[in-house]
Image 1: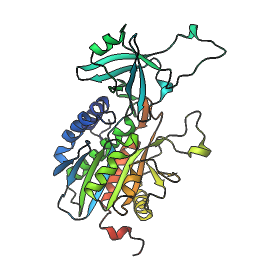
Image 2: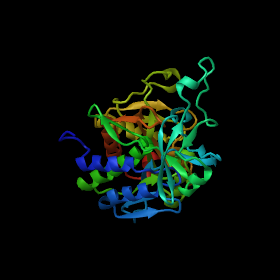
Image 3: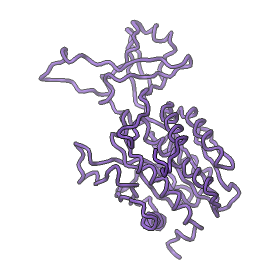
Image 4: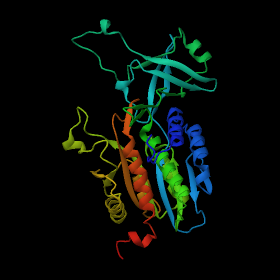
Length: 362
């Protein structure tokens, strides 16, 4: 990385270990421990809740509370059915893509440890070429190399075991980060880097800052719903990923025109409070941080919706990171976009003073 990069070598080392660690929805604890260990030097205290959301807090006694948030979970599968001859059928845990499953290696998480397997698929020679059956949830299956159901169970595998992909972090062309689970552990990484910058630059905030790494976003924003009630914030800036729409087979008339490398994406949606969004846009323009705009219609589909409509209404905004190949094992983002999201959140925080800034009636 270049000497003037926001991201230090230690930052990239943490990012790699954090992404490589499995953190499926409902089982995020090991990833949260890594995240809290990295964040610890930059915060005053931590909050955790019953289901595993982790929060680093700066100025915990301040009455005015600002949240910056990402989510910690990754999509995965559950063991749903084991056949008599030892094959495993699955159901989704989050928005797992059945079309990418055939021939993928998997890790099945059991009390005895990781059990390796593969998603099998009929060889091309054996499929009817005039009537090929596409992968779908009802026909994809996992093979552990076992011959009976009993052999599978002896390994500790049972209905309800969670299944993840082992694909690990890599860098392409020096500035493209590639891994599974960038959606949205990159968000947790970016908000941790904001905390690091505040600490290293000795910035004193006039409010309490809650750096929130929520669980269970992939199944309906559940972790954010819970922690919003615990913190009761005045302001929330959420970061998640959005689609880079400049790869093949995406209709820009439907999905908008967003491109990796052109900067953070600022959302326009009913859940986004206009004055908070305007503060972020003004900050980007003032600090010459490149950015893009995205209209998300009725809902953002992110934890923004959970925070915005909690506690009688919380001024909320969404800053997204353009990402290619969402919900695959080769999700891709650009280093400069990551740095610019970090910088935009950091600079926006320095402009927040109190809740009256965002009142429609002042």
